[in-house]
Structures are given as C-alpha cells and as structure tokens.
Amino acid sequence: MVAPFGKRRVGGYIWSITNQNPPFPTKEIAEVKEQGLNSSQITLAHWMTKHYLADPLDCIKCQIGAKGEKALTAPKNSITTLLLIPYASQVKLRAETLKLKLSTRTPRQQGKLLVGSRSAVFAQLPNLKKIVIEEPENWNYKDERAPYYHAKDIAQKRAELEGFKLELHYLTPRAEDFKNEKLNSPKINSTKVIDLNQEKSAMNFTFVSQPLENLIRNRKYTIVYVSLRELREKITEELRKLRVDRNITEIFGPEIFSLTGKSAEYVVWADVDTLLNLPDFRVHEKILWTIGKLSQIARKTIYLQTSLPQHQLFKDLDSGNLTNFYQRELQTRQEFSFPPFSTLIKLTFVSKSNIKTTLEAEKMSEKLAEFSPPFKVSPPYSPHTSTPGKVQLNIAIKAHRNDQLAKLLEVVDPQWKVEVDPETLL
Image (cartoon, rainbow, N blue to C red):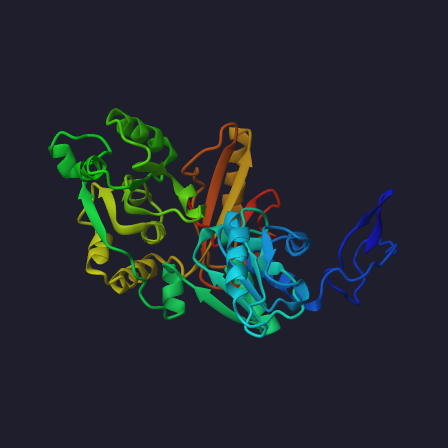
C-alpha cells in the first residue's frame, strides 16, 4: 500500500485490520497495491514478532526478495524439496554435485531441489513438499540482523503452517535438541588428548607439542586448527622455526568449515582451552560440535591439545558414549535454569559514549526491576570482546514462560537490540 506521510507518499504494509477508530487523526490510504505476502507469510510474520520480540516490518522484509545464496537443480515451479546447508560458499557447488548425481536417474526419480543458505528458508515454491536442513544446530543459521531468526525455527513453523515434511540431519545436536527430539548419540572419529602440562614439564612452552612435531617430522599431512585468530600468527611463527613444509602442514581457523573437499590424515586442534575456559553455558557443546566438524576432515585421528586432559568431556569422547555427555549437560542446565529449561534474551545497547551507554543500561535495569513478570535479570555487563570506538553493555534475561515474553516490548526501548535465544551471552 501507499499512504500519505506528511508531505510525502510512502510505501508500507497492512499489518492488521480493526473496526475501532484510533485516538488520533488519520488519512485515507492513497493506493493499495497487489498483495505482497500470502496468508502463510503473514501468519509467519505475526508469529516471528512474538517469538523473537521483533519489529513487524523486520519480520515482513526478511521474507521478501531473492536474498541469500540459492541454486536450483530444476525449474522453480517443479521444485519439491528445499535443502538448507549452513555455508553460503558451498551452495552452488553442492547444487551442481546433486544435479549431476540426479541426472543419472530416470526422469521420474530425478530430484527437484533448491539448495540454499539461511535465508532460503523463506523461499516461496508452489509445489514444495519437504524441507531438509543439514546441521540444524549450526549457528550460521542464526541471522545476525533483525529479527535475528534461526532458520530451523522458521522451517519448523512453516512445516506446521503449510503441511511440509521436515527433515533435520544433525551432526552434533545442541543439548535442547537432544532432549526434545530424542536423538541418538553422535559418532565422532578417533580422538587423542595431548596433555600440555606434560609438555611444560618437558620444558616445551610452545603450542607445537611433541606429538605434533612427530607428525611433522614423519611427514604426515596434518591440518592444525586454531580457533583464536590472535594465536594463529604465534603458532605459524613457531612452525616456521621448525622449517615446516607447507605442503605437509597447514594452519586454519573456523573458515575451514566453509571450505569444500578439505581433508588430512591428522588434525590437531592446538588451542582447545581457548573455548574450554570461556564462561559460556554452551561452551561444552560448542567444543563437541567443533570436534564433530574436524572429524569430517580428519581421515585418521584428531589430536586435542589441552591443559585439562582429565575433563569429563574428553573422557566421554574416549569412551565413545556421548549420551553421558548430554545427560550431564542437561542436568547442569536444569540446575542453573538454562535452555531448554528457560528462554534466554540478550539486550544490547551500543553507543560511542561510555556515559550514554552506562546511563541507558542503568535506566533499563531499573525498568526491568519494576517489571511484574517473574524474569531473572542480570546486571549490565560488558561483552567478552569489544569493538573499537564502540561502548557496549548487555543485559541477560531468563524467562520460564514464553507467553510472558511479549510483555518485554512494553519496557524495552527501540534503540536496544533484543535477541531471543542468542548464540552466547558473552
């Protein structure tokens, strides 16, 4: 629709219709254009505003247009299956591979797919019958822009509204997925722990442990994974001093997971403790997920360098029984009331002024303290990593009843970022 707005005419969307007159002067709508959204999309947008405490316009705009990476294996009107993969860089290659594979079948057997990344979950396909999501636990499916949706949530809601079949292919599920969906324990390739305490006892204070050096000396093709960017240069320098052949040993960070066809006989995760020492309630499942991704790369063994070799997670990996890990994780989550036993909301305020950010955070804390629903609210806190030139403070909220979440919108000012089910509270 087009409506007069001051001296201008602006485009907009009709969110709802009511018979009640508003308590302010109104003007006639200048023009009603053809419907931009179908009834299912409108219903989905209304659900998103409540589920993500999001602005209605953001929930409409994210469904419109050809956003994200998508590739067809057949004409659009014949597509019956939407396949979501977590890395946009792999979409075209994956679609071409599938198209070539399916071309060997009879016309009746040939798959008719759209392969896409996160935002392809909104694709409107007239003959769509099924949505398949690979690694639905992957946080690349979480949009970093408003309304901060997760593609798995959207796919589940669309399947409910439109009668699609939904398939979720987990690698290492999150704890809440393991609980709610009754999943089997994931399988991880062989892992070995390298005790960095023993390395220090042998007067080796570098990240190039003796087992890693042995792999290099024996010319075993090895990938060294370093999760922290700051450590990558340090380890690169340590390997340079050993005159390592780059054709034998390569160093990668998280970007390796978006590459295709990368593999090695051995993978050494050099800085496991970078994650293990974070005060993040999801840290253990993030380590497990990272090991799961590395197991897709290592043809033989994954080595884990750590100063905490007796940690129960490593014992679970060694035993091959990760059901114990999930049961223990869920018990801890329940004790401290973390998901799936509550819903987390992270409020974030950012400005260039320390005074302004602090003042706004104090005002928000006071509002939340006076708020009637039984939420648990943290004091304002700084993020784990800072952005140069920006001052940021977060406030974390735990809610036990989702039907009370919408009331937060009565309190939270629009300049605050509201993120439901954040990847991390840090």
